[in-house]
Length: 188
Image 1 (cartoon, rainbow, N blue to C red):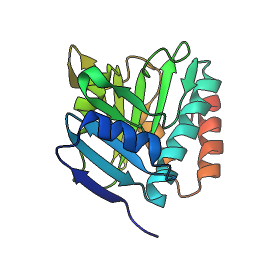
Image 2 (tube, rainbow, N blue to C red):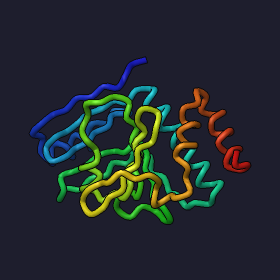
Image 3 (cartoon, rainbow, N blue to C red):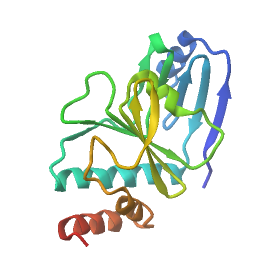
Image 4 (cartoon, helix red, strand yellow):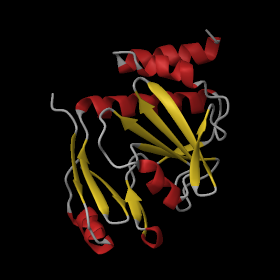
């Protein structure tokens, strides 16, 4: 299996980024733009499996706990005035459908060296960003224009990220989802 591939370009105009994003229709190609820096990334199979496991587990949690989450997967979000744009690995709105940007963005980080996504999300006004990195969740909440580390989600306060992480690590995605659903129903 091929690993993630990243390529970073400096001095890219907003218009070039938008044209590339709109015209390059390559499955799986992700673009992150922040004030003239453009990262092109092709996720690995491992990356996509982790993001899908996380999404399935969060959505089971939302169904079992009646949390109104509205998912938008890797939708492209852009804000010209802030010169920022990207496709989160997964994203959700809480309590209602998408207005302009999601409330929660989820990023799977398997390799280093890419653009720091927090300034991009800050420019878009995404309230919480959840990173999956080194087999654990790292949460951040937007306070003003900066993110601060967060111990538990303010938007989904009942979600136990320690337990969630245990199920994300399972090698069998289907069995992990079934086991997580059972754990949610029985509390053990």
